[in-house]
Image 1 (spheres, rainbow, N blue to C red):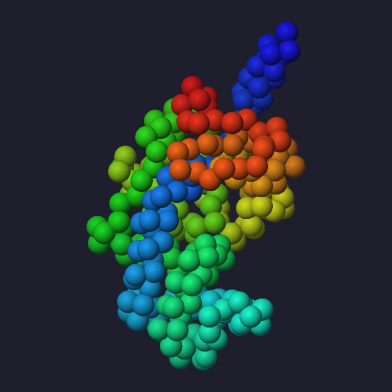
Image 2: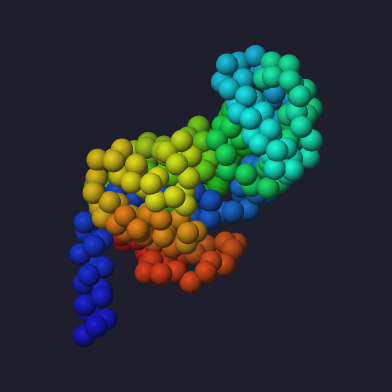
Length: 257
């Protein structure tokens, strides 16, 4: 029967999966936590953080990247105002206002995400932040590791931000179950080449990697080079266009039970 053939094909495919590559927002973590907790925290604390830590080389690097991005936006008539000066001299108020402007637009560029991660690091350290994951995440991570599968994270948020999120969840520290992390330094999530680079980094054939995300365009990019793909449908996620060949799951309990 056709249904039986499909199930057997999926089973064989699933057995060949060595590594799971997971998105965060809308996949392991509620979108509301990102937009109603993390983003507002970064906006509210950007000025204070920049004032206190501007002299640090890593922060200066983030500011330099933001100034370059600001110049590009001004050239495109996009930015609210040009920021004058260098990473050492530019107005903290102007930089923080620009950071807020970028966050409101959910800009996914590396300088912004890097700075956000550093701001959140302080929030986690001083107890003002505690991250949320869906209830099925921690049990699934433990189950997949028992099955011998490796778990990797791929998010537009910085690697630092990813480690902080999974290291400070209400379910405990999950970083001990995660084998590695990827951010926009490997490439944008909707670009096929990003997934080719990830497969090379993992030294695993693309068809032995399963990518789980709530965004069809990301899944399409991964599937185009042979990744197994799963569209994760969670409460609060925006509607996606019809997926083309991606399995649909509403819970990690349905993945390798």
